[in-house]
Structures are given as C-alpha cells and as structure tokens.
Image (tube, rainbow, N blue to C red):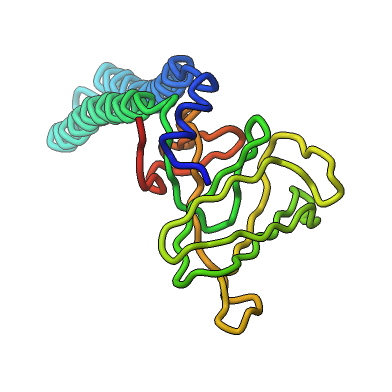
Length: 237
C-alpha cells in the first residue's frame, strides 16, 4: 500500500521545469493574433488608398456622394476599433493562459491524485499507483494491458472496505520487468460469493512532472500520462 504522501517522497526527483512550455505557448498565441491583426490592418490601409484615388480622380462636374464616403469611413473606423479590441482580448487571453501555466507549474514535483475515464496509468521508475474505494472487504482483481491491448499482468488485491491504494511494480505475468510508459488498468471489486465483482473506478496517484498548453487547455503530465487539470482530485506535499 502506498499513500499519496509516500509517492511524493519517492518521486520528487522526477519533477521537471515548464518555463519553456510557458514561453512557447505564449509565443504561439502572440504570433496567431499578430497575423490576424496584420491582415485586418492591411485591408483598412488598402481601402484608404482606394478612397483617396477615387477622390483625386472624380469628375468635378459630378462629384461622388459624400454621404457614401462618410458611411464607409464610419464602418472602417468601427473595424479599426474592433482590431484594437481584438488585440486587447488577445493580450488578456495570453495573460490568462500564462497565469494558468504558472499556477500549474507550482505543483510540479508534488504528489497528485487524478481521475481517469480511460484507465490509463503511467509506470514511472517501475512504479504505478492507483487509489480506489471498495464497497466491501475481499479480493479485488486488476488486469493490466500494454499499449497494444495485450494483457501483460493480472493482480489480486486484498482490499479493505473503504479507501485502498495499490502499487504495481512493473512485473509482467512472465516475471519480466515492463518498460516505463502508459498502461491500461481495469479493476473489479470483491464479490460476496467469492467470484469477480463489478468494475470499480480508480484514481491515478503519481508525481506531477510537467504542464503543457494543449490548444488553450492546460494539461498536467505525470510521467508519460497527460491529463486535463480538471481531473486533478488532490495535491499532496
């Protein structure tokens, strides 16, 4: 049995910095915003050039409708204001994402508990820990599959009623040591009759090793596992 605090103590050396990720994410957002604003500004400049050309070459005996010109100037003035607004919003988004990245980076090196709907669990330094709640005491059954979907190990867990943790040491059914990476766990709880019970949900317990910006969504990394920050259930010391 391994607690979230113990995982933090064992794996704190695995923490990595994310300053490069923060800079890259902000730079990417800045470039995209600058390209869009440059395009709008170019169109506005072209309109002014065409307007001046029309004014210079209009027939003095039949001048063009000034009301039409005024209306077009008002419309493009609104476009210019929208350009400035978009620029401000782009800056605000950058600052928000940067703030989220920096806040996320504060938990790097700490033990975290995250929910999973896919069953993906990272094996880091031959250790993969999950936490689960058993409705009754008895034997729980854990099946572990590799990235190809092949079953490489089956484990039996002496579960107590309530909260439990379990750590797989990376040993396959044939006694070989599996490489670090992401594996798929499926867990079934104890049954009153002694047979395999119903599926149990579980949480991944590990050390936060990085933070990434995935298209505006801030994700947390635990070894080879990448998961949204919204899946974080607890943070240890």
